[in-house]
Length: 223
Length: 278
Image (cartoon, rainbow over all chains, first blue to last red):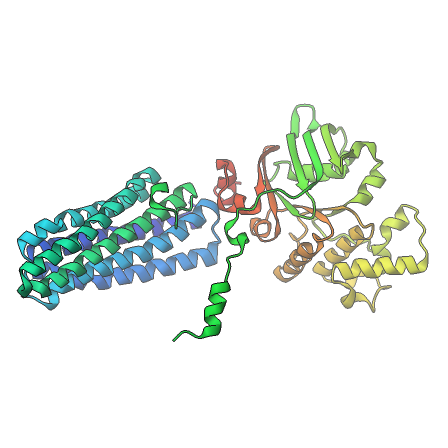
């Protein structure tokens, strides 16, 4: 195997490792918030440094490959896509950490089961977990069509987020003493919505890498 | 606070269409190659049924692994390949819609000059005489002021004038490899050709001399059409506008260099330019 190919294989393995780590971060953060598991939330926060370390390693790897091997065509698209996916994954992990820190910083916070149910928080958490896993599957198998569903799923996530605002507002009116928890809950929805956006960005990069198509800034229905 | 001058700058900012438009090969053509096949032996085709047009005032790179026929194709454009014995050629090449087979080779090679892999100035001639060697060899007598003008213009065109203007009547041996190659390009330019063919012109040069030749070729395409055979894919990517990829005598893919190096359509092209074979 040529030296460049070896480097690309190593880069692929690193980004897949990071992707799996980020999937577990988002999944654990969601589980922690739904079950008020402070220990699990603390574990997510502890692992955030590992994600950051991966990001730096992969950034350096991409920089070296471009500087030393001048990749072209699909190799160049792969390196550029990994570079951007890396950055999106790191942001996703930041949001997972942000969600966990709500529990870590306020151990007494308890979200009402009724509002969790009415806002579809569980559905939204499941949805972003699914989008992240679909992205990884598309990347590993080099099948851009696996990533296509992510765009419509992102729209569903946006919809859940929009509806949650009214549900939470109604809940605050009925339970003004729970306003603080509700503001935290709005923050959680906002973070999950951003995770969905980053998953969508990752899907765009997968299309760029595999099909050489630029979907960035295209309307969602044209993706 | 936003500074007003910056606000107006941002409001007036437009994105150059060059950033978003995909280049296509819409330049006018100067050479058209139609169904060209060349055989060194009866059963061995070096070039197989190649059809392509070379764009005017552009640099066209021909790439491909050793033995793919790229040098044969290049040489066929000014019929240099006919110097090989038992060669047979089928098909047509036109320069400005005129068949190159209807021209004498002398006339043709004045219109389509050639520069070779290794710098090959005439060792017994001075720098001055090297530049106008084509005229001398063809028995064309020029008056002294005409000769002086051709020598000066050609050497200026290849940015060699300032380096050699005080040594014009010395032999070219003291020049570096890069300077000798620029002298050979000046010799090709002396006839004011329409097209310059270059067969791996920098493969024997160091990176600095290579960079000078590359800059020179980019400048020269303002006035000339350049066709370049190169093994150096980074060079093709850096300086050419359009690229051909040949394999086993066939023209596999011909597109803008940007398209070839970012999204080649053919898997064989992709494997070659990414270094997976060749």
